[in-house]
Length: 77
Image (cartoon, rainbow, N blue to C red; front, side):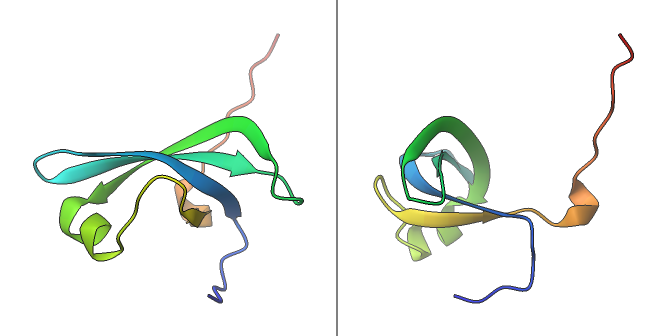
């Protein structure tokens, strides 16, 4: 899989919970060596897409974040 987006995080699916219209997919981030980091990403994926992709526990996936969707705020201490 080749994608032009630079904001990518690889990980392993730890759980998939199907709702009525969306599935909650939990992904544990892996480091460059493929070791689990303990950091999680949770994504809402339409149920039909989730089933079509056959997403399940143990799948290796890449989470992709469009830059326009990321906003960072700095706290003044």
